[in-house]
Length: 116
Image 1 (cartoon, rainbow, N blue to C red):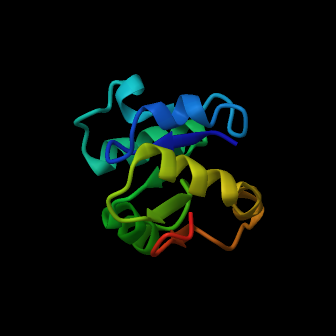
Image 2 (tube, rainbow, N blue to C red):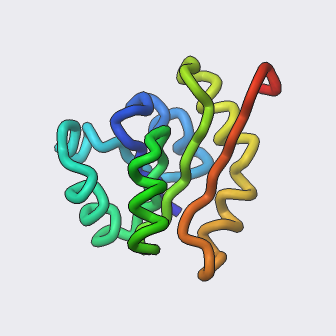
Image 3 (cartoon, helix red, strand yellow):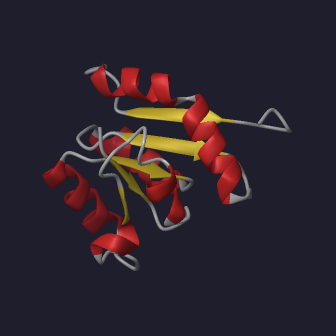
């Protein structure tokens, strides 16, 4: 499974999570740093990528249009990159299961407080 991290997440996440999600990328590394959501959506669809975002817009687009691509909405609030990495690692098995679920278009991961 390859993830595409949205610009509201650190480019370091793709490298930090390479052991779990090889060949994942960040929109900046694809030349999509300031691209519209529609361009990012199209890019992810054409390449079989799962979009990971902290932005409601991709969740909303997923509800309206369905997959592909699938969307993972990280509802973490403002947090350091290390926390986003820790949460993603903790949910890695759930993320892999989500990719296999044909009937699901998006996965919301909500973390409040100091759980991670």
